[in-house]
Length: 451
Image (cartoon, rainbow, N blue to C red; front, top):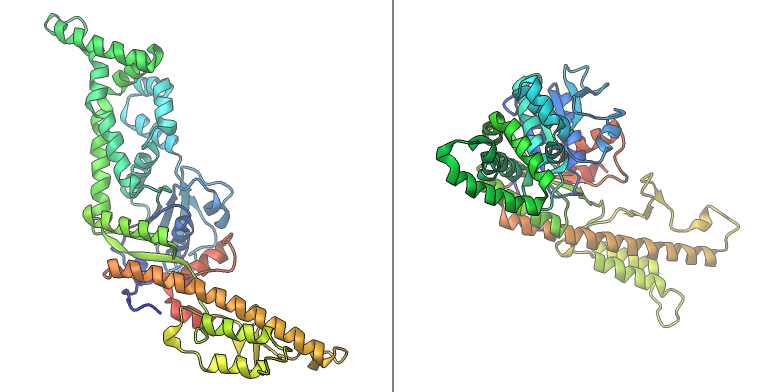
């Protein structure tokens, strides 16, 4: 196994600490961020915290897992979680347009708010302008924290392949809305007919005329109308973005980088770790999802394949080796130091049926007197060879995962790691989320021994 040993991330200590007020799950797409965030929420609520989970992932799996018909922009109580221990779990899915609308309604008088909400440029901006989703995710996080109704907020960040867009985008959008371009677009309406501004007005008119040709006259007018209506609100965007950024840097926030034990995912996780450090964001550790394990790591892939080959050659006069002896020798002579990882299907005197864990006799003729010993032995040998090859494949997968993990740990030995043993199927209910929570809080080695 790997030589580098990362410090262990104790999830329960993190969740139980009353000083932990925000947990941000970040990582590339497809690594289980949404499931991890939901499982953390369930576990924290059942340990007495009052939790709200904010998901930005467009997939609706979180709602299904929590038994909520539809998540929306309002936190909804999840029934049956945390009641006995005084904890509560609420969940919501970001509606970025609704959040933007709420921002406008809260910071403009009713007449101006109506004009902004009806503006075509605003409608395009609020529905899908680059960075809007990330800005509004941080805006919603700030709103939730300000309400102080929950003692723990868990954020499932937008799926992104380009590092920490949810940190960068609010600044970019805030700069755009508070920037020179918008102010220049507003200039024709502001300078009006003032004699002292005639020269500037000519220059601005030339610039806006050029922009109009590129954007189209109607869009240009929509942008100018939007800019004029939003004039009093522009400073607020950057200010609020900066306030949320500082909130993320505060001691009560903990970032969890979520990854799978795959090269690309861990390469991106390493970049996340470096970026968080550069931005002075408090990193709690790495959650390594879907890690495979085995209860028979003493049997290496090489020896399993060798034993399978011997079993496959049974009956060949040129090979007098006894398959049972070969199998036993392979198992007994395996060298743990040479193993890449492990398998589940061997036990003393037989093979383990993975669903039941019961050892089965090697010779099926003992259970069925109608089966001839020769055909039964042949069938058992083929089954044994197949199981050994499956075991070898599993060992190779484990070896790749461990080497990938070791490379990350060598780069970032200071980052605590929680390894989450893979579940046999998808998570689709609260029981599945609880199972993930259990795996998050129990070291992988103990999980494998228990299994």
